[in-house]
Image 1 (tube, rainbow, N blue to C red):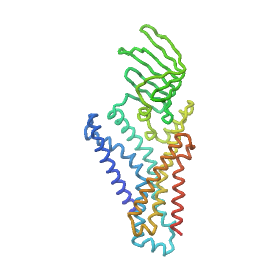
Image 2 (image 1 turned 90 degrees about the horizontal axis):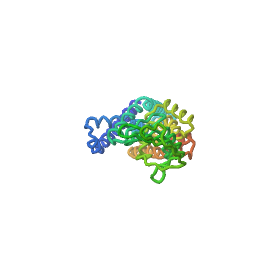
Image 3 (image 1 turned 90 degrees about the vertical axis):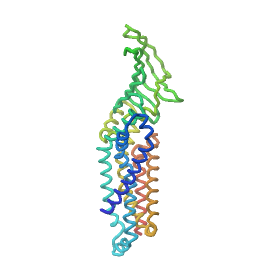
Image 4 (image 1 turned 60 degrees about the vertical axis):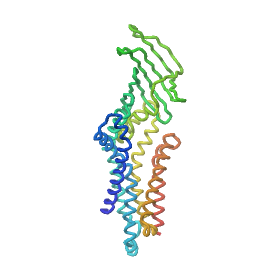
Length: 351
């Protein structure tokens, strides 16, 4: 276990050091344009390291396990243990324990440190560096200051780029309301916002009721894109498990589709579990005869498996976002397939 932790920490440190260096240097121009000092810029990059630590952990697990078992394989320790009647299933137990502990650690970080640091990092990114529209996004509502207009949206679905519960309030230089527009829903198509079931009130000085006009459909130029809303609104990685679950209940009670949030909620439990699977897979790879003679080959195989998992996990979750797979299936499908592959590979190693 001690040897595994040593290699795991080494891998994580190297990967995070590379991430911090590359992210810092490639964004220097943006930091200068935003007027951020080099020290504050480094602080911004470091805020993202807890999130990246969690993302890199599965790769760190499989690489560390492969190295440990590969070195034991090279020194014939595994051969001696197997000759003494110890099975591969018994040898893999320390790796399983390490995988379980790291799975819980990932979930713990995702519930404590990651939401706080990512919320601060995203605020700096969009409010200081990119200087986007002034925005306040909560779990239930989005408020945006766009030039002379204050926009309020009850719900935004980033998958189909739709808005619900829309209110746009325009004001003059004296902060007097000149127009209010309410719409039941809106969708972004062909580079334009289309609002439906629209009521427009135009106000003149001294007139509190205003002139009211109704529209079944109206094209509105808000000066904001769906990508801006998706980037600036509160993200699921800024929410704890219970907070996201409460948000889902609220969204569904108001009659909106919470599929994307439900996929992310299930992903908060599915993704940490991959540490256990990668530990089993890494042990099976490290025990193979080919790795005994060529440890770098095992490391390359481990990286390839981690990369394949990322591709498959991203693919299945995107299918869940698009409602082509149930949320549970989309979040756990990659884990199930890799667990089957890991157990099959381990069984072949035992035989």
